[in-house]
Amino acid sequence: MEYIEEQLFERFDIQKDRFAITTYESCTFKNCDFSSGRLSGAVFIDCKFISCNLSNAIVEKASLRDVSFSDCKLTGVAINTCNPSMMIVTFRDCILDYVSFEGLSLKKTEFTNCSMIRTFFINTDISGSVLANCNLENAVFQKSNLEKVDFTTSYNFTIDPEENRMKKSKFVLHSLFGLLGKYDIIVE
Image (cartoon, rainbow, N blue to C red; front, side, top):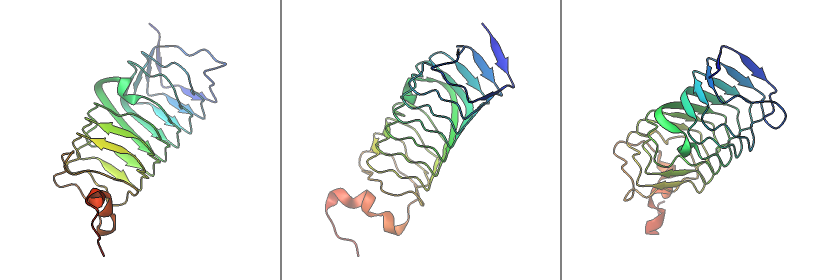
């Protein structure tokens, strides 16, 4: 199996260029288009994706070990189909709409300035994570560990405290409706 280390991939297009299913270590992918492409089985270790489009990419059994995504579009990606072993990821300024994190352990993950519309956190452990300035409109939180998660700057969320573990999670006063909305109460 081929092994690729410390390379810069710029303006790569999976529809036009050959993508090797191999191990990529300390590589940077910049302005690449992986949309609707097959990344199944690839291993990414200490890699950076910058301004890439990964929308609807197939990532089944791909490994993401210490991988950062900055200014990337991952709409519709089933990240939950990746290899969960040693998965460490960070997301900054990304579009994560309709992404599934179902069943994953993503403790202490950083999500910063992300659109996470209709993102799925079902049986997910994101304890100790920070969701900074994220739009969580219609995001689904069910049976998840949200303990010590910082939601103080995120918005548009609806979370049922009865369905999730939430001990010591952080919120601001004006976001209480996102926690109490199902009770149809009025907070002034």
